[in-house]
Image (cartoon, rainbow, N blue to C red; front, side):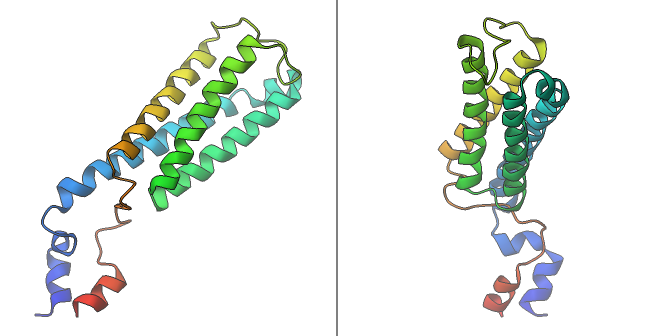
Length: 166
């Protein structure tokens, strides 16, 4: 029996004996990050038509935020490295800053929401964006992303590892 065949039968062995305990938290964090990013995108997409009609510049900012959420979510799915988590944190912080900015200052970007701190969808988005910021900070501080330990897309042995083991 070759080493490749034994790995196929026992896929955890190719990642060391601690595979489930070391990779599972990273996978869970990445899934949560992707879902939160998609949630932020959906919340802003739900308001995009009304926002473009009332304040076109803010509608454009919503569109940029939605695209950024999709790009960073795809990066979390494919890589899950520190760059993806930094991007997720920047999206959360940027959206929070934008919310606070439009509630404090009357600008051409949004001149209708100054002082409107009770918008239910805005408060829900603020909660989700703060959660994203917290998850991003945790992922970076825990070192899961900093060490490049991204979970594999599947349990199959990577071709480079097959060659190295042979």
